[in-house]
Length: 246
Image (cartoon, rainbow, N blue to C red):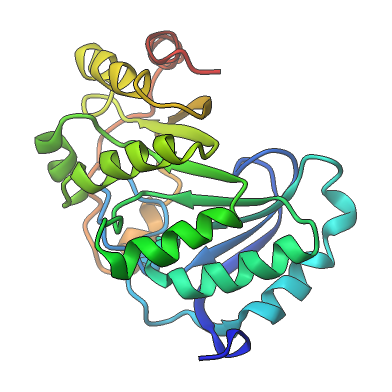
């Protein structure tokens, strides 16, 4: 298939993103995700149906209209959903972006990662066109991770190791949910794992919020964290101190 024919299923775009990588970013949210995180604020991105089918060239043209706002630090971020489910499209988009000298960031859960050649070969090529990986580490304990997301954290931790060995720049992100991901012992274990990685430029603690709860109800789903409050400032600060977050 020619590069120009590679199509992606896109949920939405954001012209002036400020929390998905350095500077001001044009953010592309892909449709489809293999996980079902209990705190997900975009459950409407889980299935592939319902998105808009677009080619990489049209998405890049839209992004370039915002380029004057990026300054020296901004650029293009692809998020989700889970972008690695549409790896050929992301590769085509990032190839075109780098031809234009655009900073590229991949925001991923890492869940689709595999060392099988069918995944690893195009993924390794994608890294050649990726300046930064934003990797979500949701829980260091596999059992708790399965309860929270429905999936093992094994492929995610393996992807972190692969990125480290590849020398790829990473930002590690951790969503802090009271009673679920804020246990000091688990946070200490997460920090110990992060300390084994090379290329980690930043660690972010993202306080849990309920802004997506209405989307669950609109989809006819019960919100799994009903009654869970947002973390206190003290809890967030403690997590940042344990993880060495900025």
